Length: 332
Ligand code: TYM
Image (cartoon, rainbow, N blue to C red):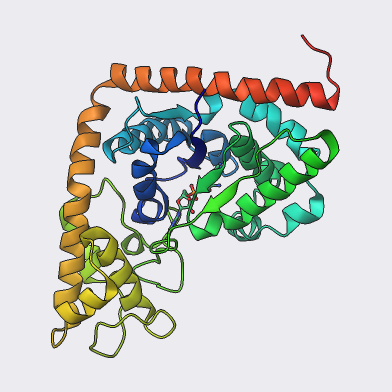
């Protein structure tokens, strides 16, 4: 019997992986496998709440798998899988949707943002998406969900759904906690530091991608928006651009804000932006090179996602059977 606590998290393959997702989520996943039983999925079912090009989605899903592994997620020590390969997600989603309130879903910030951005396609899936995310988490009886701050509201709704269900049927689900990093929980756009760095960013310079070429990364950092002062100081209320760059530098180079402030006393923003760009390039270089190598080995990737799906299905189906029994479905 595995006594370790359980972790589950996922990322949508709706765009290429960004520095935001890496620093807010993935980077923190890597060390957890020694202490926790970890499940990481590529949530392709979530991605189709917004129209996707099928060939691109397939390609990005595999690329994301390669980048998970290249970032240090060892498939032997973590269960890595593709959401649509484990049918229990769709099945539990339906049950949980019947325990999720219209009013709760209407309050979700991400739904409001995405429906504003996709006004011609406000589909039911986009609206009920948090019930599917709750299914992702509750199927594995996850204790902790490592995510960036923007997903906190969805994890809180998952807790409410779990508590509501447990209130009716007894202790069926573990009630999960969000696990949000102290630094890097919300990486901002390089061009509009008031907004979150996002894979759907229309401004290509605002977002850094894990697989981007070093020259492009350097160009984006050199053009990053700063302010009219000249001092490198952490002040997220008044110096949004500089503070965001300091957070990125702190995570990429392993330095505290104080060390960074001292390093750049008397130096200009130009030097600082180059240092941040170089630190990010060096942090991403081994990930990009390893992901490129893995992407050529289709047989290996296939083995990883098949093994992962088998391991995940075993755990997920156990929870699903319990839920079906509780709600009164006749056993097959
Ligand atoms: P997604 O795909 O938008 O983002 C994936 C993860 O990256 C984090 N993140 C960021 N963190 C810091 N700064 C940023 N700029 C930034 N952008 C993204 C997100 O907080 C998230 O942790 N609904 C989820 C995916 C999901 C999921 C799950 C997550 C589906 N099922 C179950 C956890 C557990 C989403 O859209 O994340």
